[in-house]
Length: 524
Ligand code: F6P
Image (tube, rainbow, N blue to C red; front, side, top):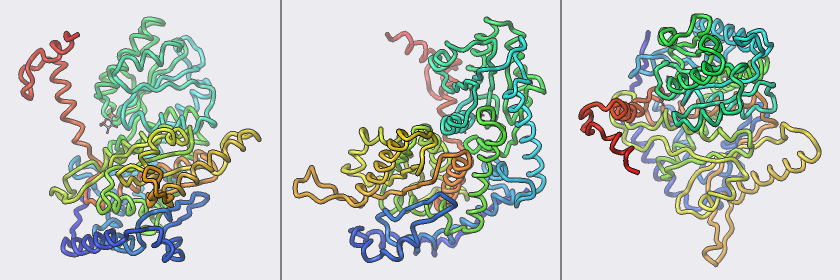
C-alpha cells in the first residue's frame, strides 16, 4: 500500500499566513466592506449544488482574505490529500490505514479502486438483504413473530450516525420502533427497554472493534433482560452484530449468519454509509437508503469537479480563518429543523474527534490552533438560550444556520408555521450580521458576526446524505490546512485506561491508589 507523505514549502506557507493575518486585521468594519465589495462577494461566497445553497455572504471576512487562504489551500496540498484518499493511499499513517469511506456511497464503476468498489458492493448487498427481510417480516423472532421493535446498541460513530439519521428522516420511517442506547449509564438502557416487548425485539450490536466497554456491557445487559423474559436460546437468536472484527463477534457468541461486516478502513465517525447504517436502512428501506447514499455521492463529485471552489472548501477556509486569524474558539451549528436535533452532536464528534489534535501528519507539533469547539442546538429553541451570547457576547462565534424551504410535513397550518420558522432563521442571520447601533450600550448590537446560511428545498434522504458529506469534506480540508491526520483518535485512549484501572482495582496503575473507586463510592 502506498503512503501519503506530503512535502510542504514552509517558507511560502509562512509568508501567506502573515499576509492573511495582516488582511484580517485590516478588515475592521465589515458592513462598509460589503458595500465596497457587493459585486464580487456573491461570486465568492454564494454557491449552489442542486437545490442546496451555501450562502456565506454574511461573513466578516474580505474577498482578499479568502484569496490568500486559497493559496494556502494549494500550498498545504489539500487537493493532493483528497486525491490520496480517493485513490486508497494510506492517509492514516498512525494506524496504517486508508480512509476510503467516500467509496461506501459510490455506485459501481465510479472513480474508486475496483477492488474497494467490489468489497463495498458485496457488503451493501448483505446489508440490504438483512434490512429488507426484517422490514418484510421474513426474518422473524425466536417465537416466529414479526419484529416490531429494534434495540440498537453502540457508541460514538457506531451510534451517532444512525441515531441522527433515523431522527432526521423520521417522516420517511416505517412502523418498526427503533431505540438507541449508547451510554454505560444503566439509566439509558432501562429507559429504552421498559416498554419494549422482548418477544418481538431485535438487538443490533454495532461496534467496529467489538471490544468497546459501553457497547459490550449494554449488550450483556440487554441479553440478560431478554433471556430472563423469553429464554437464553431466544436471546441468542434475536441479535445481530455489525462489526469490522468478525472474530471478536464470534468469540462473543454470534454465529456467522448473525454478523454483518464492514471494512477496517471505515472510520467510526464516517461509518453511517456502511453496514453501521443498518438501523437506518431498516427504518427507511433500501430505496430511500440508496437515495441517501446518492446524496452523499453527489458531494464526492462536486468536490472532485470544483475542488478549491467547492462548498466544503469554502466552509473549511472560512472556519480556518475564524479559528486561526479572528480567534474564534468555537463554532455554532443551528439547524432550524427539529428532526436535525442530533446533527450538532454528530458534527461535534465528526469535527472534534477528527481535528482536535496538536501533532501534524508529518509527526511535528502544529504551530497554530486546530479544531474549535463545535456546539449547537435547533432553532428556534436556541434563540431563547444562547443567542444572547451570539449577538452580544465578547466572543465572535461563527454560526451555521440550516433551513429547508419547505417542511417535510404538509398541511396549510404547517406551511404557515414553517414560514415563521424560516423567517426566524433568516431574521437571525441578518441580525447577527448587520447588528443595530444604539447609544444605550446594553441595547447596542455591533453585528459583524459571521453566518453561513445553508438552505435546501426539503430534508429528504438525498439532502441529508449531501449535508453529511459536505461536513465530512469540510473536516478533511481543514485537516489539510492544519496539516493533521483527521482519521485517528489516540486522545480518547488515556481516559479509558484510567477508568479500566479503576474498574479492575489495579494496584498503583498510573499512580492511582488501589481502592480509589470503592472509597469514592462509599462517600455518601
Ligand atoms: O470514541 C472512540 C471511538 O473509537 C470512536 O471513534 C468510535 O466511533 C467509538 O469509539 C466506538 O468504537 P467501536 O465502534 O469500536 O465500538
